[in-house]
Image (cartoon, rainbow, N blue to C red; front, side):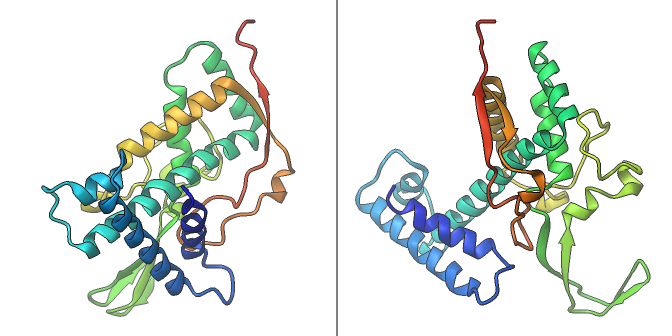
Amino acid sequence: EPDRPRIHGLCDTAFDHGRPGVDHAAAFAELRKELANLATAKRQHPGDDLTSTLVNNRATTLTDEELVDTLVLLVGAGHETTVNLITNSVRALLTHPDQYTLVRARQLCGGRTWPTDLVEETLRWASPIAALPLRYTTEPTQLFGASIPAGEALLLCYGAANRDPARYGPDADRFDLTRRPSAHLAFGYGPHYCLGASLARLEAGIALKELLGRFNLALAVPPEALEPLSSLVACGVTELPVTLTTIDRTR
């Protein structure tokens, strides 16, 4: 528990590509060091947690380096992404009152599909991972009239693909819970499809259903005051101040 703020800070630094003078490589190396220390502590004093299971399960054949890489993956892909998905969903609703009203109407009617619609449209409209660095061309390539030589680094942008007018129509930039179909590339495609996609959908759906079922929410700051993450990879905001009003369930 005492290590959480430091690990959180190192993750934020590793994902933050916009601040000048930040040594991201050093932050990532320090994050790996912290997680290696965590693994050592859990080996000596195991608990009821996933790290202890990975460290102490004799059936696990991970090397020390693979173990740390797995923990880095759990923190990055299992936390940063889900936080952004939940935050982006709430942000989308609070900046689109008509869609918030639609969710409220469905919720009050006991509709079963609104959490799914909300999660899927958020994944399309504001993908938690907006871009994937890096992929490299293995041979000279022509793409939309541009000549890309072999060995060139490419930044693949899910965020742009998920708002492609050719796929989603002229209103592709609009957040719309009634959009059909809502297929997207937020989890990738093909052999690199996200292994945690089902878990991410489940986590976000439960969190949003509980949050919106207990509270009425409103932005505590103007929408233009929300500061986006300065990251080439992650899509979200640095913070999302809201006011909460408890819903009277007795009415």
